[in-house]
Image (cartoon, rainbow, N blue to C red; front, side, top):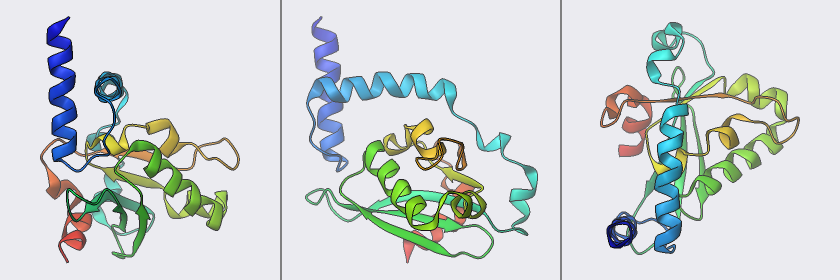
Amino acid sequence: GQKKKDDARAAYIKAGEEGADTRTAENIKGDFEKWKIVCDRKRSIEDRPRDVLKRDQPGHWEMDTVYSSKDDLTCLLVLTERMTRREKIVKIPNRTASSVVKALDRIERRMGAPAFRETFKTITCDNGMEFTDITGIEKSKLNKGSRTVLYFAHPYCSGERGSNENQNKM
């Protein structure tokens, strides 16, 4: 009833304040319902192979979005390789899950599926709404197989993705 409408309205206002695209309150509410389901499917950073911590082999990336203002919805999808600190930066129209998946699809098309899979063995991101489409991020659009493995850092622990956070400060 009224509480659901009030919660959806509050979510809509909060999303607007955080620079998200302006969608209807019902769509925002649907996203939060979807996020609850995603939380059950998330692969924790604790499950990531231990050798990723050593930074002695390439192919393990950290991902985040960076935006400049509330008035401009465009942002940058920043991928930082943990060993080499190499970066891939893609401008995306907004901080939505579909924009992130489309950007990764473009990178994969340019590289080819085998090269993408070898380059992006794992990707670790924060718990932002823009990373809710786990299947879209992990599944190849070129061969319908897996293209990467996605891990999520603990909430409010940006240091678990230190390479990416440090690069984004520059």
